[in-house]
Image (cartoon, rainbow, N blue to C red; front, side):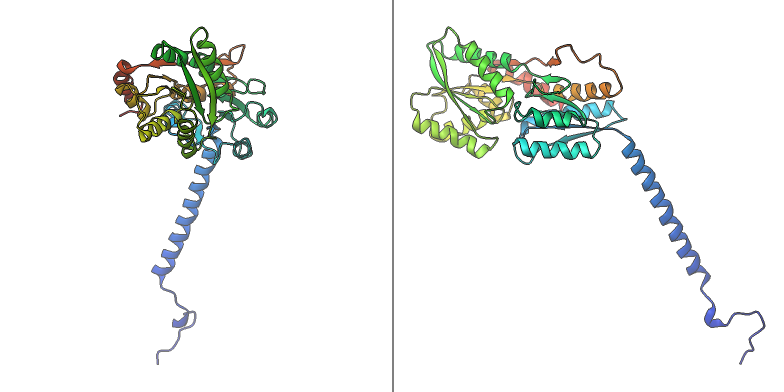
Length: 336
């Protein structure tokens, strides 16, 4: 047998050099990747986060998400987020905002489910910069509201009704949240706009942003209130549900329908004449301008906050002749 020389390791103690180097390289790469990930994470955390909190799940908010996307392109130093509560309730919306504030979100813009829940909103306002949109909470400590004048929108809806029913009528309203500030403003404006006409708003049925219930409410009214000859969809999805229920009942075109917002079914109904007209808002601008307003505010620029804390984005009426141009503009805004 071969003698073992002094200082030479026994063959059993030798290690393949290639395998050792490979393990070392892998370990080094792991350390480097972990370090880079840590840096990236730290950089992401360094960006202040701003959030938009809706009042419930609805396609209406897609335009606002598009507005947020445009704002994100102009606010590279911020992380913008869009959040939907699982249910349209004060408690669920509060829990969502609590989580955002705890996570360090610097500003929140919210469509308040209930304007009377000032204790909830003021708690959030004490933890982060709070703004409202769509449905205001004017008695809370929110910094500013950016959105429609709901009373003006209601008055525009009354103009549609008066034009469609010069001899008068009885209207039933349909809405998601009866306690929300946006509905109350629209109903007030609608009623005031009907003054001097022979048209009345008999009542409004709420559905808590449950679209199955929204359609069922229309069917129930058709069965229980045969004297109703006008229906008003106060929220974006209410008018499409009115359209579907009337179509199912064979009464489409027999009852005057006054709409809000620009759901595709609503726009199609206006164009074909089964819906008298619709009042459209600009949620794209609410989000786009709102995020930029919040970012400026956090930098100490309060010049965009008016003395009364209210920033109005105008609404307008769409009749049949307006639909094609409006739809083309919607596609342009969405980049289609």
